[in-house]
Image (cartoon, rainbow, N blue to C red; front, top):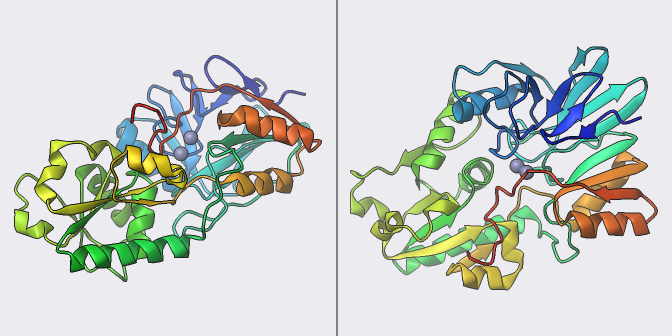
Length: 335
Ligand SMILES: [Zn+2]
Ligand SMILES: [Zn+2]
């Protein structure tokens, strides 16, 4: 039984008449997390995990109709049972479990297995069919432990300060930026941030997340404030006049793509930190195995490689095309 189907509008549940992360406007959307390729504008009703509600409102406007539920809470659509389970990707991120007549499908959204200290840690959910992301579905992607990465970042900041330079860290504004702030808060006295990071940061502070204060950079921020400073900026700020005011500075990029050395050189970074909010190859395999699923659909990322590997291992897997992107720095040859 196809509890979920892949349609032109997105992942659809015909019996429950709702979509998961639809990429075209629909009546009822169940949202895995607040990243823009998953939580799109124009749906009539949104359902998401409680912690995602203020992030969805921030991104899509205060007038959206959104209902929040807790992890593990159950809601029924025409008798189809729906519940949300931690995906460990960013604050509020959820896997969507859908059960119809005893048949269980789970759509993962984006996920990672390592506990980042802020997102509710990933929980495997037993199911018959698992729809998994595969952003880093190649065996070359193996993440070091995050403590090792944060130690490296701390050391790099220290060396920059010894050399009289600011440290500019490029990190995606929702997820990666908070993870950096959370893990560096005892090592760094003062953070400055681009507005794209400072705005969601304000919302999260109001919601009570344990994050350090951040000074928002404005055109009035004096140049003296940047001396030896730690600055967090979104990837879009790179190659931008906005960065010039920080000189002298050193540029560090935080992304899973930094595992491939050429990506760092291509981006003119002084340092690449392999920090990802997605599962690496081993994490994807571990997650898929833990579901016990007999059928797997691999979406965005290296879906064909990953699906082929699973098939060779005896799990019926197929690649499906979706409109989800990659919120990490895009690995395109032009950049
Ligand atoms: Zn995401
Ligand atoms: Zn995604």
